[in-house]
Length: 190
Image (tube, rainbow, N blue to C red; front, side, top):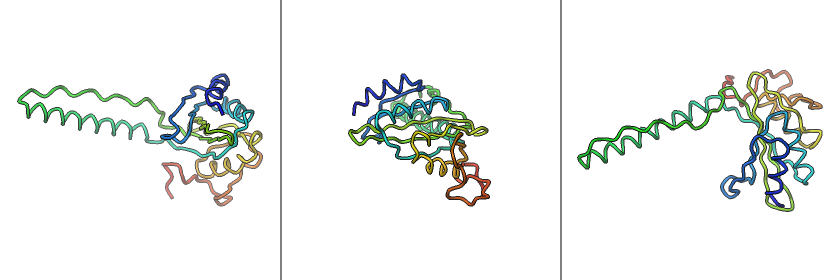
């Protein structure tokens, strides 16, 4: 399996970003970010190349930007203290603190659908991600391409509330039929 060729085809399908990763460290060879309207095209590329679907799940990014900012501020404060201590030990004036570098903006109201694909003939595991607003968490279903995704999408809908538009039977799989909650959302309160 030639991951480079798959990367080119995914780039051509309109993916926002296709990043080669270190498989031993990340567990996948390609990390693909697509807009919801490009999801089916990207998945169709993998289907045409003989990939199978491993999983579909969700991620709730609520509060992550604040956590990243807090982590960066703590790291910067520790570095500034270490520099000030070293300067004081050497009898010098402490250097000014470096500004905190932003980690990149991630909207607070974002849910992410994550799809993992693999191939039997070679090591080319691919992760496709698409982000949607929490206020309208809709992505197209891929169950017409991969019928096995049906169950994964139902489970993801149960736990994260992501609506898979065009899904043939998007009813609760693991939650009670009358459940109006999604227990893996970070703002869920039982």
